[in-house]
Length: 366
Image 1 (cartoon, rainbow, N blue to C red):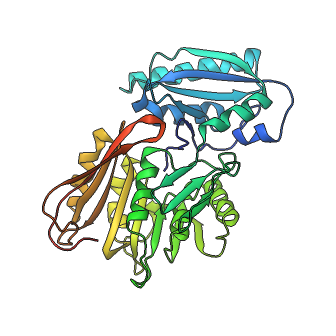
Image 2: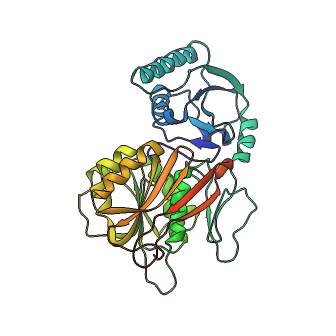
Image 3: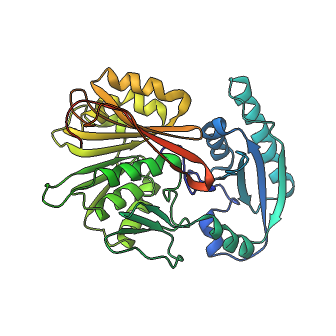
């Protein structure tokens, strides 16, 4: 997803090149020198994306975003060796940027900032409690490398560490995509099913798809660092030759494509999903399933309407907190044998609830 990361309670957001003396999350594992300063401030959940972009502009690198699942509070943190006048100057620049967002109609919160010293070795151990194994039914297990939990018989396993990447599947948008991958995975004797991952990030969806038996698996991202990380994650999962990762700008792809995929996931920002819907849809097989995520609840109806204009029908949707995701098929394609709505309720990551609504249609099930 273009905006950001997902680690359940702790979400890391993709950034650009480092502006010293900012310290990246992975540096905690290799550097144990003087204490760091953590600059932290609370924001409103709906302002996360523009605030993250602002932090990236001011600091030139990646912040961490912490969501308290019980209170709904969202906190943004930046770790730096800067102090004194330099840190104060960055705080003023950040405060001015928050004011600009407010003037533009985006309310980021009160902008009150706090600075505290953090010992690297303490942080490097304490964050691990936020990263738990994630099971998608009996078909898929995603776990960090330090977890002792192992996949059950017949359960595909993906190993991802947050120190190497952003995106471990526990954010609402990614978890919906994973559930749809499991639901539509290839069945024995039913033929190959190809998968395309637009905006691959850590590569989690492409890696999970390959583990679930999809073939071929193709993924791309605009960010070259994301592609590098995704390739490394695929290699560590034994998939170096089975997943094709590439740096690609969706907006420059040909509008049509002779290569179509049975399942396409586009976990992207709202503007891209709307503006590039023709390019996205034209890479979906005639009987394929298109999974769209990265959408706020307030934006979702506009996405549904925009894709309906291009002959796509919503067949399943999930709402979790401020996020809503959906699966689409081409109009006229059957999906649900019974003509009534079906709702699957469940417990989301960090204790939040979600419901997957299956929208009825005529014809045979997928």
